Image 1 (cartoon, rainbow, N blue to C red):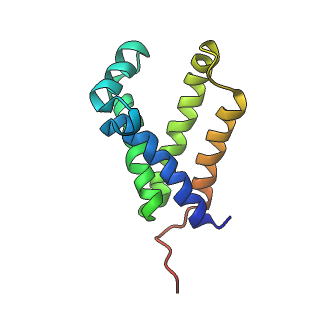
Image 2: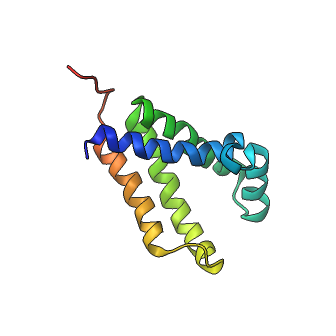
Length: 124
């Protein structure tokens, strides 16, 4: 798969998850609900909770449109690695996750980071 196609697909996936958290789309709880869950239930400091939401929302847009792709991919990579580290135990304790799914999220984010061009790629 060409890297631009992969980044578009990965970006769409991340944007969908970020828009659930940021805007409440696709059955999400929006910024207020997600921040409340992250800070009160998961005990994540507010600044890190917001950075995770922003990384998925804005990083997904960046990958889809080919803007600041390395920065977008880096934010998503950090977000996914932290999520897998912390949520892996939560997902398994709730019987709603799997180690294979966790590894695939990290692989997706790492691949987007490693294959992203330095600048927006255009057909020339």
